[in-house]
Length: 154
Image 1 (spheres, rainbow, N blue to C red):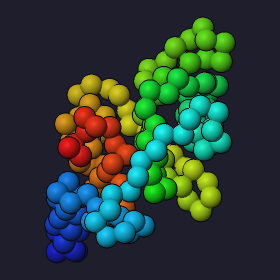
Image 2 (image 1 turned 60 degrees about the horizontal axis):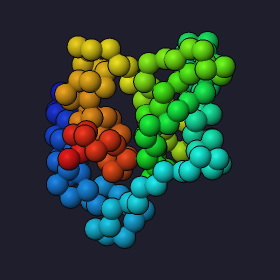
Image 3 (image 1 turned 60 degrees about the vertical axis):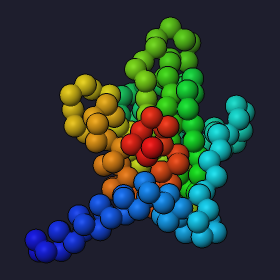
């Protein structure tokens, strides 16, 4: 059992190193050596609405809040999306903490893969120095190009 775990760790580290050194290596949907194109759906675009609706449903389930979003960043590529948004109450009277979400399209539906916490000094939260390295290890088929520019992908 320990040998298999060690192999998985070595494989994950290898994939991460390859992804940071040669980003095109991790993507099978593009031509060899080609990095997937990242796009940001425009306001009013159906894809943008579907992505935000998936996050909205997650917020409603987790916190019981009915929110709208001001999008700070939305990067979509190859069935994956990274979103940074500012949630607000529908009437605009309440503003909430920044929200980050990683989404994945499964079949034809966008699903929230994870929403990192924003607590300081928590190794599982977005402010942890290893957060983006860990997310790449957890989702090795995710295009790292969707992650924020200031993340560990650089």
